[in-house]
Length: 105
Length: 121
Image 1 (cartoon, chains in turn cyan, blue):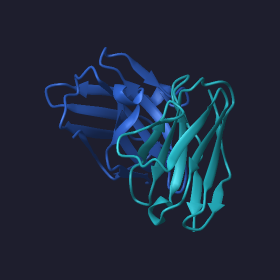
Image 2: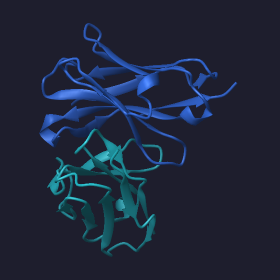
Image 3: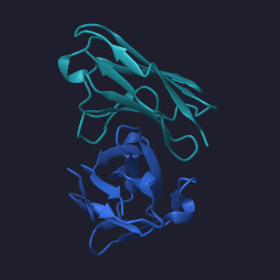
Image 4: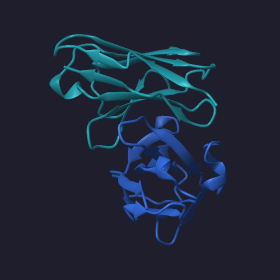
């Protein structure tokens, strides 16, 4: 099983600041890494797939990078609606999720 | 727009079987551009993939749950099903159904709202 480790667990920032979230895989997943945003009481929403491709309707302030075992989600300038939990997920070998990073004000 | 809606009992007694239905609308469950999966999230915890069924009929399971999970579809009703046997309190979670979309590299593009299932006697 491929284990995904996200860091930090919590990120405390202010609107307008840059957020950098990390996801590390226990073995290479090539570029098969996705990011989701989840707000309380809601289902996750796909933001980024295949490491850097934005899903439809996702604003350009969200960007993804990385390959192999190390990946990054960057939110260039936090908007109030961006405070949420972010999950990474791999499809290099079946599917697994990271434990999530909470971005809080 | 594809929509998914989970349904089923909110309370299951151990060691009974958890049974959920996902009704798909706005698209066909036999589509070759999507396949279908189940994911769960224990309260306050992260997401766990349970399993997925491809349009070929092939099914993939999370190895940690494989012996207890059955996933199936009813194409006439456009529905997806999950059965999880021998449940314990550890199976208490919000259960989501989701589509894997080829447009999104096979990742989970559309999700149901989720349904909370509590396992308790």
